[in-house]
Image (cartoon, rainbow, N blue to C red):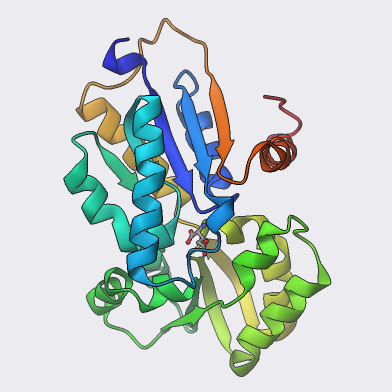
Length: 267
Ligand code: DGL
């Protein structure tokens, strides 16, 4: 098979990356995608950097064996720990996620911006470098212990999620905030609960929520173009394959989530 006809390999620790896949598949409607969620080992964000590196490389190896022309790491945590070594190991392009601190910094007005991300992301060197770049005390980073676990359970509006947010953000109540950065792709599914929390417990006006997906998808498109890797425009068909390390049952969950986020588009 010609390189251009191969799929784009997307992975995350679990269901979170489906939110990125959705936008990537929409922006590149004739490209094929293979998605792997490592639900068996999720959450990554409370593991050591070495473990995350090991697991992320295994995801990349799985996709490489399937035959892909580029990797899209739809996980901030895996990016933080493993993007460098995956780039070194493979010669195909690697596109990844990063908490959208830069747009949040530009958007700062009179308040603060709060980054919600996994402990591994906010404590990782990559994120700390990003913070040094903007060099401000107006960005507050919150390591969200336990949150990915709840999102993986699939009930995106549960009281448990609201209660955990209450616990995690308790010390910041009443703060004037301009934006929230969703620094973990799993949190895209609980945007409504996060917004509800912000409405109730923060001082907000025109709150902006940055998820970083748009920038990543644009980058994916740009990199494929620059490397002449786009599929032939005349081949209009798009195939999306979903895999989970937790097996078939989890893939059924993916299909439900997929039709939910794509207004009932059945794969
Ligand atoms: N979706 C992953 C991210 O963007 C979640 C990581 C986890 O499994 O803790 O960071």
